[in-house]
Every structure is written in structure tokens, then in C-alpha cells.
Length: 248
Image (tube, rainbow, N blue to C red; front, side):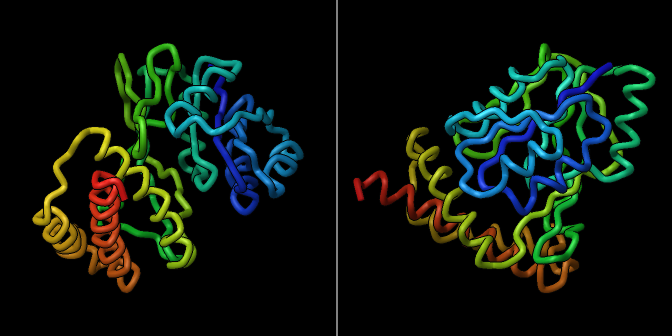
């Protein structure tokens, strides 16, 4: 069993080395870059990755393109701001040694936010399918929250994929601006009715669910920030969609 690792990237010079260096269990690393103006390409190439330039096509399409460029049918897809934990790497080595028993595997994703590992707030275990046979699986999702769809059996790994999210609230706000625009475009495309009740009460419910029901309070001040930002995300998403629908 041989595995191709794939990473999509754009201006990820602060993250790309950590991601690539965690992929020692893979037999090749393919980085699909969509026009970086920093040192992302240079760093990736120095670390032995094969870099392919491709203009941005959307998250799912970009990741499917990366899978198509892989030499091997088994693909391990991670984002540039993610890396394998040593325990997860060991699990994948064991699969390579014994052979896969499933067509794809999920793994829990542990996120670091503002320097703290988040164990509640609905952020963990956040299982994702990232290791899969491309003959049986592909990415789908036109806007945000892309995911792998598998036509076959799915197994589960126990060790963490590490996700290094925002280091500051300013970074979180910049990311949120981009994602809320995509989410709003999806709502408009799906012709979702954006009424005032949704705009007012959905953010309040999101905060309550994240901070209390999903025990965000156990994540300290960072958990409070996550709950507030999740509520704000919903408000901005719906407000942008409402303005788009009215032609503004």
C-alpha cells in the first residue's frame, strides 16, 4: 500500500513546512498551489513536495484536482494548517503494514485556537474522512464545508489530526469574512428564505448551544470567544445573504 498526500495551498508559508514534515508515512506529497505570492512554493519544493500550479476552482474542486494528480490511489488529504500527530502517523504506518480493511478512514480533528487546544464547544472530536481510496471516494460541496463522499466502507482511526486555526481574533475575523460570503452565496443559490426571525434568533441559539449545551464554558475565555464568533458568523452570513437577495 502506497499513499499520496495532497495539500491545497495559497500563501501558507507559516504553515506549509509543519504540514509537510508530518507526512513521513506518505510515499509522495502533492501541493496544489493557487497563486501564492509568499514563500509557500519555495518551502514546499525544498521539503520534497511536488508542486502543481492551478488557479482557484473552489474547495471541493481544488481537492479533487489534487487527488487526480496523485501517483497512488490511496490519498491522504490535509489542509495546509493541519498536521498529523505522531500517534496518527503511527496508525497510518500500521495500516500500510497490514493493508487497508476499509475504503476510507475518519480521524478525530483537534483544533488549537488562540493558542489553546479546544476539547469542547462542539469542536472535538470533529471527525473527518481524510484517508481514502480515490477510486471509491471524492470531495463534494460547492461553497463551504466540503466533505468526502465514500461509495464503500468507512473505518475509524483513533489518533488526532491537529488543526492550527486562528492565532488572533483579527485573523479569525478575516477568515470569517471570506467564509460568510461563501455561505451567503450558497443560501442565495439555494433560494433560502432569509427572514428577520432567522437573522435575530439563530445567532442567539448558536451562542447558547455552543457555550452551554456543548460546554464551551469549559474551554475558558477561548470558549467564550468561539461561542460569540459562531453567533456572529451566523448573523453576518444571513445579513449578507439578505443584502445579496435584495441586490445590494
